[in-house]
Structures are given as C-alpha cells and as structure tokens.
Length: 274
Image 1 (cartoon, rainbow, N blue to C red):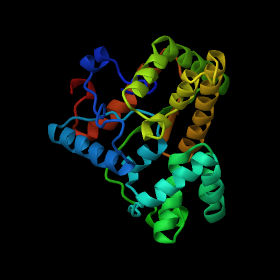
Image 2: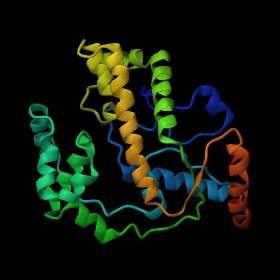
Image 3: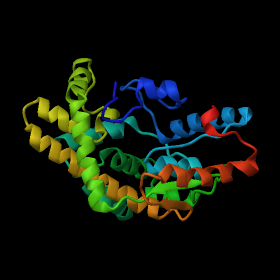
C-alpha cells in the first residue's frame, strides 16, 4: 500500500525486469534490517545457483552496509520499554533523542533528531545490554564480507539534486500520494506504524487533518528529503569502494562496461537475462 511515496516500480516495470523485495510484509508487521538481510541473502543464493548476477539498487546506507559486511549481533528487544518510550515521545516530541544524547552521545550525533525509529533502537540496546549502541557496533566491526561486488554511485551536483527532489515530490503528489495516504489511514494504518515514518507520510497525514497547507506540505517534504539525501552522501562517502560517476545522457554507456567487466571473471550472466 505504500507505493507512490516509496517509488515502488510500476507493474509495467516489474513485467519488464524481474524485481525482488517488493510487498513482503503488511504495514503492521515488523521488518528489520536483519529480516532484510536474511531475505536478500536468500535471493542472492538462488541467483548464484542459476549463475545469474543481481543488481542491488536503492539508497539506504545501513541496508547496503549490512549486505556487504553483515550485521552487528542483535541486542534483545524490550517491547515494554518501547511502549514506554513511545508514550513519552508522544507527550514530549524529541525527548527520546535528548535522552540518547545523555547515554550515547556518539549515536545521538549520528542519528537525526527526527529519526525516532533509530533513536528508539539505540536506547533499547542500552536498556537491554548496559552497553551503548556505539560500543555494541564497534565490537562487531562489520567484518562479514561474503560477496564480490562492484559499487557504482551517481554524484549529483547539490543544486541540481535539490531541484530534482522538488520535481520528484511534485510528481508523486500529482500521482495521487495524498489519496494513497488517505486510503491507508482509512484502512486502519496508524501513524505510529513503522512505514508511516517514511519520508512524507506523516506530513501528508497532518495535511489531511488540516494542519498543513498544500504548499507548506510540498516545501516540508522536499526539505526533509534534501536533508536525508545530504546524510546519505555523508554515509556513502565513507565507503571507499564506491566508484562515483557523473550523471549524463551517456551514463548507462559508461556504467555497463564496468558491470560487465566485474561479471566476467565470475562467469555470471548479464542481469538483463534473469
């Protein structure tokens, strides 16, 4: 149901190229980075058995890092603590991040003040283990490297990127993003469910309640996505193996030789053939 705001491939696109990882869970279900990693590795294992390569595309740095280097052994969950934290956050927005800044300043500096999901998890790690999330992650050191990869990134100039983001937000709104959120809320999806924390969804819910005019909604969502893109850039700049490419009409022609060269020694098929 979260289709437009997540740029889900259309039915026509899915008919043209085989896609994985779409419509895996319902909005009320929990889906973690660990669950993603289990699923992604099963897809890669099946593709390897067929002798076929897979293109992993997207923009979530944590998911990429997990795929390339594994995950920190998971600290236990504490549902009661989460419920308590969410109730406190509802009464005083930002309180959880302030609390995190006290117990784990490095995690608080890394996690945006509005990113409640990651703030909640960092506090939960400290609550259940007595160790900060930063210490917990550093013990693991992302040492699991099971795949041969060729990483390509597109380096957009910042001003052009902002313009593209604003254009994309207008396009999603024109496609019916507001009606999508209206339908989700009518179907029983609540704003505290994890998918509603995706960029733009709660802002549209506020618009539907009459708290945000359309122009203000457009500006707020574009700004939030721009800030997220900046944080993405910071994350990916720490990945030394990414080959950065300049955008342009010949981008595909420049990228394909690198991809084919990476596939050749592995004896794998062109992903288009899958």
